[in-house]
Length: 217
Image 1 (cartoon, rainbow, N blue to C red):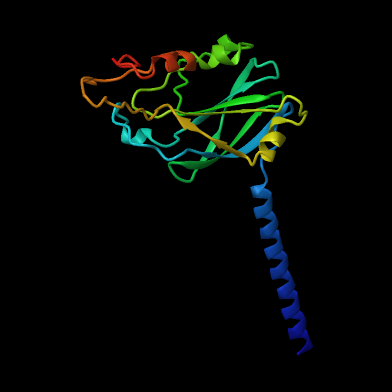
Image 2: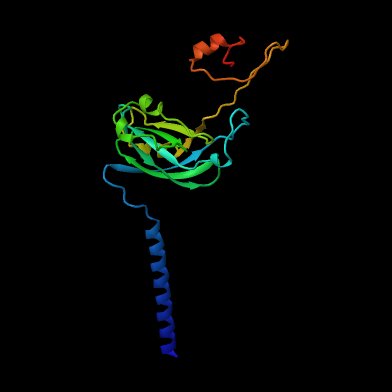
């Protein structure tokens, strides 16, 4: 009888040890890979506001949502360092969780989703300004482009991963589509056949407001 009790107790201890080993294996598997020296790891949620109806430009059904995301990293002087590709764990067409590894001297990041990077030669833009780098990018036809920008506070020495975490690890992205409305005068003498957004600053747009030439094509 005593021998049977000892055997049962030994078997129970063995099962507990095996379960503990399995738990340790799962914990080890969940641990992130070691980040290379000179880099920091980011993990963030991206949110995209609900889209308004757009009838001026067709979008392929598979062009909605985030298909991929590239991070453009800039240093404290606003000069381009490099890009990083974020790993995507999509939750819906309007939210997603991402992770990426960026240089530790990164102070500003432009988050760009669905951008065609085949024509972007990264080495040609080293140490260029944000305006020089971002202005040359063009979206693919029929695919939504989503964008957001995060910059470290100039008087805060914490790394960008710490500041992003302090901001809730969330970035709100905007689309490359805008909702535009045109009010036709009461006498309806204005026939709208289309419209084109002009590259004007807000002062010029205010001067044009109320005329029949304010961005009308």
